[in-house]
Image (cartoon, rainbow, N blue to C red; front, top):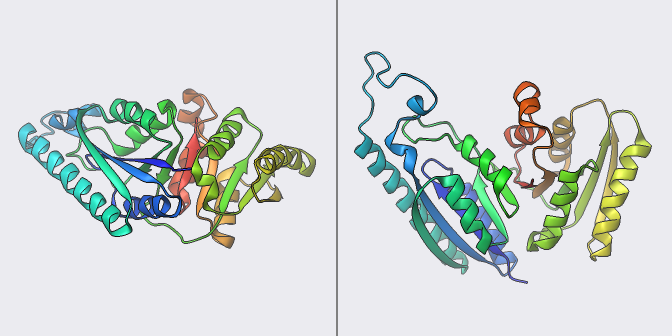
Length: 281
């Protein structure tokens, strides 16, 4: 099975670590890469204005729209060139497309051609580059027709796949998406079942995931964790203890209102764990 990987590059998305990881996966899994560069149409408007700030911001001059657009185009062009160089060195087939528009919409449409979407996580926001990276990533996670792998700037080396499984609809969809893509072949899978009080409940959740994966001929281990720690802390502890190549979990189980007040486990894992996170909503 050949895995088709879409690497999406927009105006301020991180690059080097994401490129190295995706080309390594394509090489190991006999895959190919579609490199997509999107110049954000909102780049002509500074991020401070998009966020509701003042266009003048006191005595601070608003950057020239044409200069911002030129800077964005240069970034995307250079990033595409760097990615193609990574692919050439790794002997991985690569083709690229370049577009202008809304990054979320363009990436979700192009994702229909591929098995997975690989994106860099939030870097330090750049006020020159339109819609913030995290906002774009959040929108893609909610609307992408394919699973998304969010890659941190720094990756802790490890082996195998950790599946954080809580029996929710989102985690069940993410598990099925993992099986449907070639990334399941990256290594042994560890299913982690977590519950604050009941080992039995945690084990019941994990058992369903283990049985599903085993039915597809995949090597599976399990670990049951009974802890009052948050899910993101348990995942972070597991990664810190043994190191994993990728985490698999469901994305955004709460309503947007609840996430606004309580925070999202998805966001906390992406912010706090130094491993790529495979997500499907």
